[in-house]
Amino acid sequence: MRRVSYVHGSYDDPKSYEHLASVLNDIEHSSSEGEEVGPANTRCFLANNRIFYFALPPFIFIKVASFIRRYCWTKTGFNRAIIEKPFGRDLESAQTMIRELSDILKENEMYRIDHYLGKEMVVNLMYIRFANMALSSMWHSNNIASVVITFKEPFGTLGRGGYFDKFGIIRDVIQNHLLQVLTIVAMERPVSLESEDIRDEKVKVLKSIPPVLLENTVIGQYGTSLDGKEVAYLDDPGVPKDSTCPTFASMVLFVQNERWDGVPFILKGAKAVNERKAEVRIQFKSVPGQIFRDLHQNELVVRIQPDEAIYLKIQTKKPGFGMIPQETFLDLSYKERFPNQRAPEAYEKLLLDVLRGESGFFVRSDELEAAWRIFTPILHELEEKKVQPIPYVYGSRGPVESDALASRFGFTRSAESIYPHSYTSEVDSP
Image 1 (cartoon, one colour):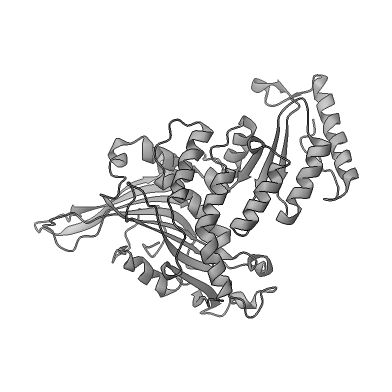
Image 2 (tube, one colour):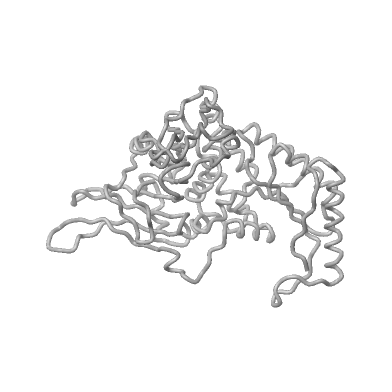
């Protein structure tokens, strides 16, 4: 059978939805007459279940949802709507969207998708946390000095500056992707792996985080590359010449509960920097009563992309007669440890979850509100005060003020580049 059909229509034309409903009914009617789908070893009949994917401009969500509900909702199976970000621009707009969508769709019919929650190593954080006693016992402010969660891209807005300028790096990356990673790093053990049990624990973390302060924030905006081949953000078509939109942000959050008391969570999002990387870096406290000199702190690093990996930086004795310490690592590189196993793409995993009705790695409405509560004050303050972003060179590590911010909260960078052999980065830093 044909697996894909294209149905032309308009967002606001009821006849388009009537036509779509007719096409869906024809497909379901043909399946009810016995047309089988799927591989030979998993033959099944198409059920009258419908999933709608809202990859749309946010201003049209409500109208489209209303028409879909009126004309295309099936009465003989389940209906589910996948909703792509952005989920609002701030707390007020998010609450408006939540309220208006809830008049049309039930919460268990909505799947607010953040593809970072489907990435292999983000899901794996659950196993690292709760399936290993050796690591679980260390997961506490008694042992951890700081947590750094980083997202870096080596390219700029690539002609999409007019779109990006409406959101900026904080809304585009930090408030959603990196904050979602933080919730899994910081959450308590859920009662079970059931969807609502997982999301309950994530919400508890978010409710424990006070709003970000301007004094704990560094924003930047990229300029021209040193060789002049890459243009500055302000030279991207569609970007206002006086734009203060940040393409780089580093900010410090705190989870105010017993486990994480006093531990800074440093979130960094950056475009047009020196490398592509997303990772979680957990830096442990120094050994009390240290008898060795010039030691670096232990770090557990979970590399989300590229080349998924987990490695633990430790101190050993340098081979030889002397008592000289040397930093090294215990490495789990996925492409080498699991050479014949393919990790699914994030959207593959999440779309399969929707089919199965599993919503644990999707954003619930109260989770969305709690996340915006943390970032709305700083976003409004940056915009109302027109805080000028610090310029940085395209292809650099970003503003040096970001390193100073991390240092102020106790994070220390290794003096040398210590990477597992599967890594290509030249700088061992977030």
